[in-house]
Amino acid sequence: MHIHLKLLFLIIYFITPSFSIDAQQSRTNFELSQKMNRAIELIEKEDYHTANTVFRNILATEKVLPTNLSYYFSLTLYHIEQYRNSHNFLEKYLNLTGKAGDFYDQSIQLQKLLENAFTDIKNCDLCDINGYQFMTCSVCKGNKNTIEDCSKCRSAGIISCQKCKAEGVVITIDSFGEHNYQTCDRCLGKGIHTCDLCEGEKQLNLVCNVCLGTGNQSSKVICTHH
Picture 1: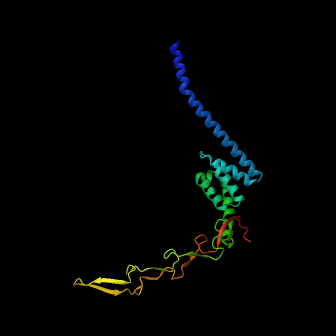
Picture 2: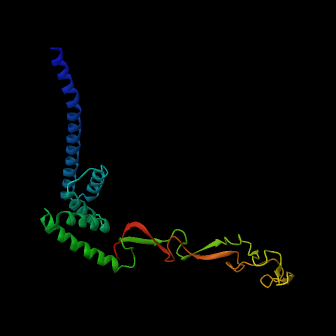
Picture 3: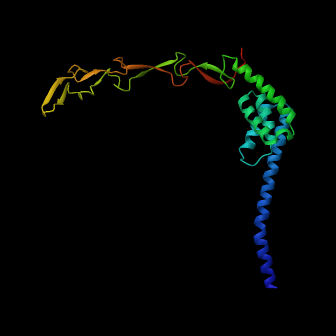
């Protein structure tokens, strides 16, 4: 009798964790399914911004997700005008499912809509390649260049002469071992000379490293192309 009880205890001990893991997995899958259905309902109601939030919450779980999510998320991103991201998820969906996908025909239609959107963006001078409106660069204020202190002379306008090591005299040794002294022709015997980077101006006029000399930078506003 005691042996039977011990065997029963061992069976329960080893099987229970398995049941617990399976139950946890089932609960997780159910929650993801609920969120997916919620996002689809939001798409049907054309509440794409809220759907976007739900989809991003699903993606953050890092679980293996249904392939159809890529299509639905791509559709959502298109409607909130995040065309580049929409294109990426649509390509992922088509690569995963091919012509056998549930939304193949709809994907081809969405692909054409994205191509039209990219054409509008390409022909627009008011936005970047992702369709976000340009604004005046916050660093150079649209001047395309920035004025900075010279790093070589530390805004002194002069530097020590490297040719004579700031001695003003260049010393050479001839073939007989004799030392010859000549006034440095680089600094004219002064040991210093005008900074060759800023040319004595103490500052540098540099291309803005934020806007790369365009005077503009991308904003977070979707461009209307007008």
